[in-house]
Length: 275
Length: 308
Image 1 (cartoon, each protein chain N blue to C red):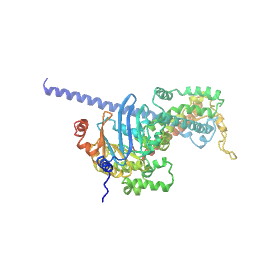
Image 2 (image 1 turned 90 degrees about the vertical axis):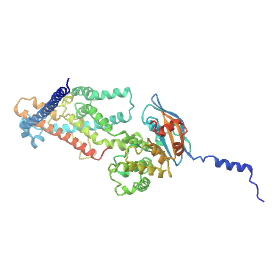
Image 3 (image 1 turned 45 degrees about the horizontal axis):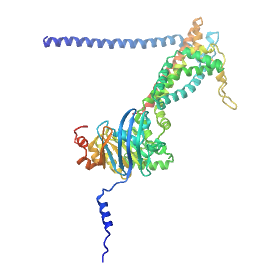
């Protein structure tokens, strides 16, 4: 005789099957507003960035997507007259990186950043990658060598530069320089890597290399990328946030957002009616 | 008006515009040539009357009542010691102030005020620095009419030049380089020390050399504080043969300097003293020109490895 399965158990299994599997949250942005002087640039943005995925931020120029990105590593603290409201929690741990007493320098050591234009230091390839590690106090040659090689391999640059690690970074091509900047950003094993339109200064071939790299990278790290290129967001991101006039209009799975947007503004933007 | 006539008028006007253009080019060329000519005549004139006087005897002799035996030993030694004091005060203070103003200071009315007044300081007549040094360093601090007082007076004079040169050198570094360092967790001090200073050394050093070549030719502030015009001894040596091997007694020694020596000779009657003055002037000019040349070379060299 077979024991009947208790009814309660059956229903709970069913529930789990129906509920969308919620990914682990890495960065939880809650009611984030940002002011540049008296000018409010972000309005009450709330957004859960999932761990080990690529989250894209899209929207027309001036919508606040780069401003939002730069809130996450407290870059705005470098300039006077800026003010944050709300909270940004980094998991695991859930510390509020905007909270009082939080040192922006500690925040920046957990977030890597790659900028719009490749901006390597006018130093050697090796020293560029090693700089973040040196800041964190690593100074043994053997440790540095190992981590620099690892970062360069992970940014698909090792084979191209292994014979000239001590030459100036500026002798590299634009695409190589940008991959070097990625290596520099990931060398310290940050929790999250922020990309601010990383391919806008690159040709299509260099762009596709960077895109491959970003997709590959999400196995190890959480990625947030600001892009003005909708196709790019579609190609590489798992989730997309659409922003407009400082507000988050819509946030969801990239496929769903592009094929079946919930909000009329999102549909207008992705169908090219404005932007 | 028929179209063809209009066209002819336009052509006439265009040829007149072209000729104004051409003439400005010609006049500009002549003016430039004239300016360079004045410099060349000055140098040739100095060389004509002074070149034959420059020899080892001239460089290694003290001033004398007999013009043929007189030399500039105490003058160029005094000038070098003055420059050591000036550089070791003006460079650290000027570079630090430049870094503070460019990288640390908030942008508000107070810093705007400071900035404007640093530019104003660069325009203050040098004799006023002499008066200030006389009151402050000579009498108040009791440094006497010494190398220290003179060097400090010149340091005040060139401080604004060093500050402005430092700020300009820092400003050529793009913001993206600073942000790259900050994004990796650098403090402002680390960004300055690891990146901004190394990348702007060429520009700063160029500014420092130009500041020194300005200071080296100054006579008014030194005369104001009472530098002597006739010195037949050298200041105590800075390096000793016995412990503690270094002495700073020279700082409090009376001194003379090249421009003052020149001034002394020019004001004397007699053809031969005039040619001594010309020779000292030529020597000073050579130092200044070679310092400027060094500044240009340094700038080229420093920028070779740095592209943005």
